[in-house]
Amino acid sequence: MNIFCIGRNYGEHIKELNNQTPENPVVFCKPNSAALTDNKAFYYPDFSTDIHYEVEVLFKIARPGKRIQASQALDYISQIGLGIDFTARDLQSQCKSKGLPWEIAKAFDHSAVIGQWINIENTDLRNLNFSLQKNKQVVQQGNTKDMMFSIEQIIEYLSRFFKLNTGDILFTGTPAGVGPIAVGDLLEGFLECKQMFSCEIK
Ligand code: ZN
Image (cartoon, rainbow, N blue to C red; front, side, top):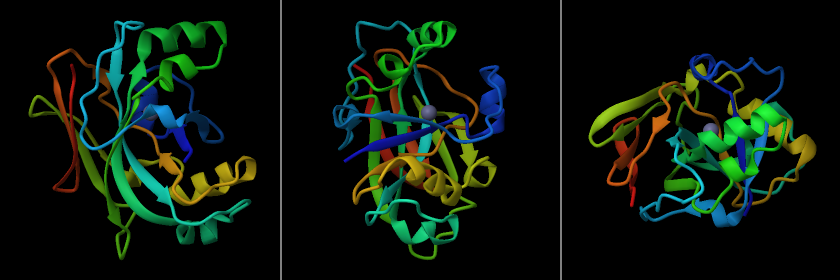
């Protein structure tokens, strides 16, 4: 199972981090060991003092494909989910300032919270509300209509470079409102009104 992530896919989040708007999707990967499933707790790692939450809509790949056209892309996804792309913002800033890859800041163990999955039936994927609550307060709210690159465009772009396999997971970028976590926090993600995950920080 591969985890592919898209960065900088919501305009308001690009502004809050003072990043440039990309011409193509910004792609990075997380290894299997990054997955944190089944509402397990996240243990604050010792290599960072500034871990941020980024709530993101997820899609699961339903069948293998390479060089998929955007017009066919929806045939390649079966399920939608919600997760968190935990980011060590302090390490990421160091990597960015040196022009180095982000992996230590983005792909570390348990950095990919993956909630439950819902089958895509007649779901309008371009108008889904999602949110993250921290300690029962809403800290991030988004709608998939604000994605700069749609899921179809993301699949077309990714599959130019990577063969997509059944079970691969796509993280599609975070809206504005990212912020730090602390030991003792409770993070809960919602897709429309449905709770998709909860994650305690230990
Ligand atoms: Zn992200």
